[in-house]
Picture 1 (cartoon, protein in one colour):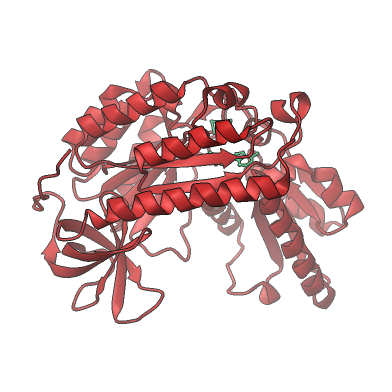
Picture 2 (cartoon, protein in one colour):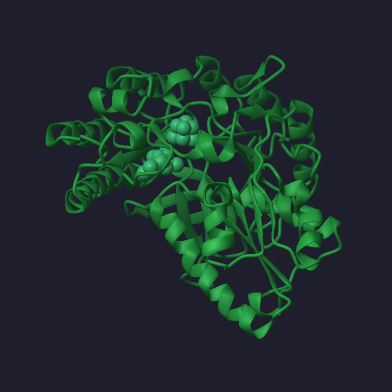
Length: 438
Ligand code: 5AD
Ligand code: SF4
């Protein structure tokens, strides 16, 4: 989300006559887009700001600003106590950046952290700098109304609102014309997308028609309201990717209740079964928080058993980090000791790795259509890309290049990566996938 937001801010800055530079030392303005989701995300920003303060000593005219969720959350501290920044702009106030910069140049500190009920930046075309020119993010909604008890997002990013369908489709058409081959539609909960009655499944269907050779992904879905219609659309349209990120957060019903997640373990598991039935070969990933308030050893074991039952292809695993203003902060005690949180996290990581390894090994010998994204970080002779199912694949470069859809046969796998041999350049419509055992 922040990645996509930074591209909007790039666009606003460049409209305002600013030009990008390649390193912070040669900048007149440095804006840091921040995240408040966990304490360590914020800790990184404080360190970064200290580094920028050292640059400011060399360049007294440098303006340093903080954007995003942390701006909303800790504005006073930024401006008064720490004196590290000149400008603080919340996630719904990016259009004001030029006028706020003007205030700063007249010697004042400038702040706008007002949240909006309508802002979606629909009319601003993001400026995508430094990307690979192959994959792009497109924001389709902002904010969140779910109020999970651990989560600060509804407070920092405000109420849920959807961007107009036409403006989303126009952006997809533009990306397709520019040669992009894959787009990820972004929202805190895309299943709540509602643009005058157009719901997410319909949006995905429409998105799939923009260019049958452009892949469409999405993130994130809440398990409480996942429509079957979307599963059928994914199964039917070849360019809608067979990969679903569906955060469970916990495998225990009591913990889910305390988290204010309105589904049970049983409902979650049957939703996933349904996904695997309707979309043969679909891959699934999840988010888990371990060590939430009051989590007992038995409750933790339910999460381990959920991971073991599902064997997610991928998972984002976190120790619980208490956030001010959330319901959990007001009502519950953050009472799982740090060392216990860490030990439980490690147990979840271990079980996740083991499950993903089994899943990835089942790809050995199979063919996949891989969209090549980059040169591999480890070797210039290799390329890195992704399967439709969102697995990273490393292959020999041969004559392939970023942006190619390559038919690849997989010959090795770890818990995180597949390795394969590129056979030939192909396309989404041409490629016939191997039959998958359900
Ligand atoms: N502590 C730890 N992890 C959190 N997440 C959200 N809030 C917290 C928190 N307070 C995780 C959730 C969410 C992901 C984006 O971040 O798993 O799905
Ligand atoms: Fe946070 Fe829950 Fe909204 Fe996700 S759905 S952003 S976890 S409140």
